[in-house]
Image (tube, rainbow, N blue to C red; front, side, top):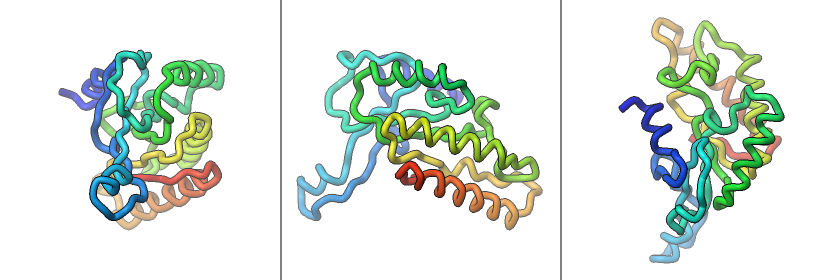
Length: 186
């Protein structure tokens, strides 16, 4: 099944996906059961469909929101305000994490931000990042995920230049995350 179709189908109302990035680690004690309780937290990943909290299994510690599918940084403020109100109405566990920061090449073009390669668009990458983190902070997100598959260096492009561009992006994203007291995670 195509990745986008899987994600969309897996994040329908009342369902949850426990996948990559869904277990978060926190500082814990170094002994037995207490260490396991302190080190692992269970996260529910929700998409852009309404959620009925009563139909969810109990035990979720926090929520993860996909930036590309829910935060949608290119939408106007009025759209974001309505989305934010919808998310809060779901009454989910605290929203601490975000994933799907950009689209990969098998996802919608709208979220594909070229920051690595000959078509790098730094104005767009910076706008997307600033708007994303600002909106994420309004939900309480402290750990936005910026995954490695966004850093694919195009064939035929200098690996040194590509690496420099990736580091430039991470530096900029780190500065923006710091403003909102967030930690970039991969």
